Image (cartoon, rainbow, N blue to C red; front, side, top):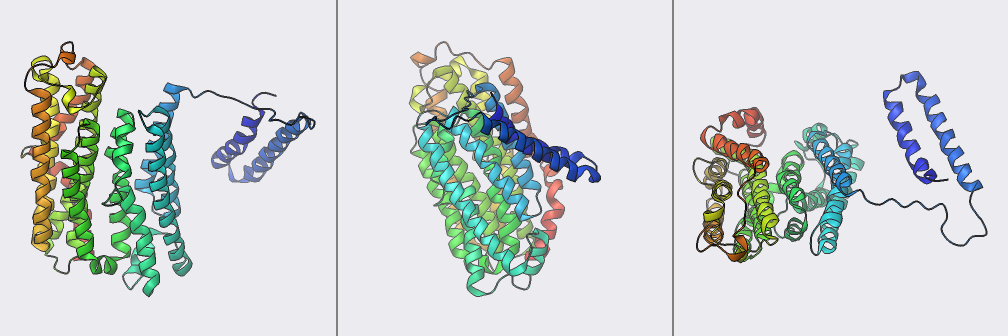
Length: 456
């Protein structure tokens, strides 16, 4: 009787798979066949059930296969991310959006570090409640407009998507769901715990791709569907973006844990994306060149942050792997022992800082160029985040790389060959985008021009 319960669960899934590849005239017979098989398995289970027994029966126990399970969940999350960025209908988009939540939760819960239970639960609750708000908002839209198609809804929004209070309720639901995912201040408090606790590879995926789902949602959903509401709340939205930039930079400065510091800097850099979006869509003055510059900066910054933040988490993971600790004060004098590791890690830090010649500078420059023209006061305050970020990285570089070699770091190996194959191509890409960014900008230039015509 072993594995009958598993068979009962998986038979309908197998049937669904075969019906999608079978000829049309075989669909109904296949569905009937798999239903009959499921009924037979259920009957066998019933026949072998001891009605006199009081406890659980026919129980199956399967241990988590650690390496296989980790890799499988990462691939499932990857699939969900691809689906989220390509779906053109809310139902599909929401299914993929939620599909990414489950493997991320399990990866933190099972393979995370200290306090993983609390971090995983917090991550799940925040994102799940945000998803509920999203679902309710789109159900409201569907009951009024009768469609989930993004393009159709964007066309309807030109004359007003929903009336009065209903529009504001739908806007609030979608905004809340996306703000949690970015995350935007003050909905960001789940992120430092999740990124700090997650395994290094999971942190890299969370910051490199998963957080971009929220920014993409703002561009794909909120801006086309609710332009009037965004313009009405313009100063408030810009204020939240500035808070994300400045407060997160100060929070990173206060951290002693390297991984938590990078997590707060991730919130800081995503705040620049939101500043650029809100500056050009939430204000009444929209000069075309500045509009296009800010949007191009936002799209480029999404790409830049993905590779730079993921690289920083990777370097922190290498330090933790070698030392068993990741506190800023747990290291010292590493330049004497691991010059290659320190040199390439410095490239990632300067990229995140926005040093000219590296990819981070191009995205931030375009965002500030466009934002200063239409929201000068907010952008000026946001520039404080650049200064604090510079202080954070100078402090870290001084503590880690300079001074006498720490006692626990005397046997540190420098970058190994497999680590070089990971680090060097990414660092060279940072230089390539920083020196000649046009090959990236050309990819989405037509989209930027089209969006500028729609919103300007």
